[in-house]
Amino acid sequence: MPIEQDIKQSKFRNEFHKGAINLIFTYGWLMERQKKIFDSENITPQQFNILRILRGASPRPLSTLQIRERMLDKMSDTSRIVDRMVAKQLASKKTCAYDKRLVDVSITEKGIELLSRLDTRNGEIDELLKKLTEDEIKQLNELLDKVRS
View 1 (tube, rainbow, N blue to C red):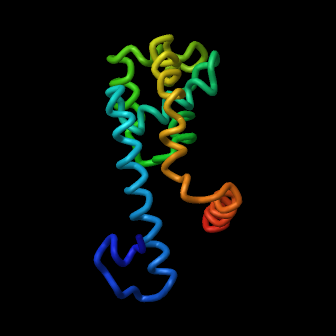
View 2: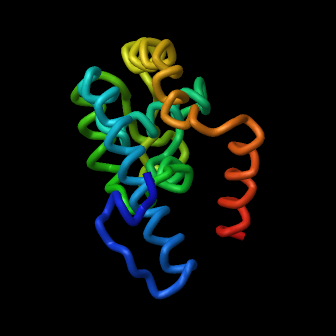
């Protein structure tokens, strides 16, 4: 469905304005659908992102600063999110051995198991973009990279 119909707006300043609105709307659309998958495991999209980051770094721990640098949502309060994940036993944290001001965060076995369950649902996430061909997805990725360059 065209963006004009989705947001019930027929006029845009120009195609650049329309493109920006379309990106923002599509981001929200994707996040809303992914949230349903994450809700089934009682985690947020930010917690999922941190778990993926920690799994990728494992067995090496990461500081909250290193996690924040790698997060998709840079505005997240990483420390607060990590604390919630520790309470859920999805991550562990301890004072860094070489710099007492830092906290080392690691994924737990429970966190790895949760990601494994979600890995089996990757098809549901991929399905959100299945209206595009593989060539179109490659082109979309290249265009999005170009916007950020």
